[in-house]
Length: 276
Image (tube, rainbow, N blue to C red; front, side, top):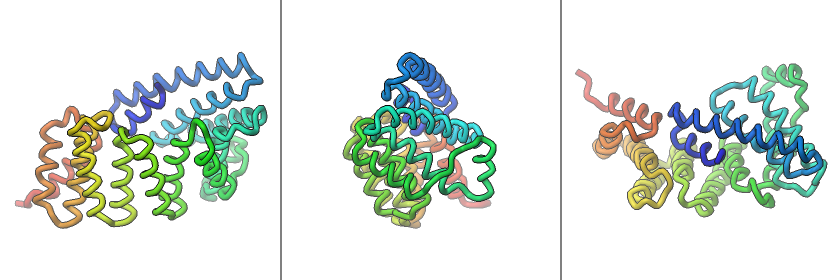
């Protein structure tokens, strides 16, 4: 349920209702897995799921730019997963979380290293952290998909491995064809990192067709996002007239569209109007 709520939030990140539902779900998950870890302290699985629940809450804190709280959460995640690995060294799924911590702790800018001192955070290792996450991506039984998704972000933001990021997203599309976010992620790679607006346009048109056919979850959210992708691509290609109908369709039904999609569509619509 927690991860289902998370993907709802990813599809409509600025909607306050979705945010509140995720918080309720993740707090319940943290409480229940913490109690399980106390009841069965020698069971690696219990510690692993406690770490996963903390990690989900940490992602939410990052989304809301709660940097100090996210740093504290990261330390607790690492401690829980280290205990799980100590009980079961073959638990590759737990290695994903420890690798993610080590990677980000290894690339933190020098002006942020005071966080490690304040919270007594262990030092990081960029190379080892990335290797751990890649092992979990290949061999993890439970977090393989999450590892792929997080690795695609790391490849984009920090490693400059654009083709590898695109390959990860396309693999996720094959595994989870009904999740519209992976289509949106591919369009973002084409538009923002490759400057390939024609490929982004193709992805947007594909997503719009899938939404119309009911071939993706949350089709009511996916269709406006697909129209935004299409409008952005047309705008970048100098085809403003082709973008307008898609913007108009988004703005004609703002209640069902994602909040950020409506905001961006309004900005594009205002910018496209002739100045008096």
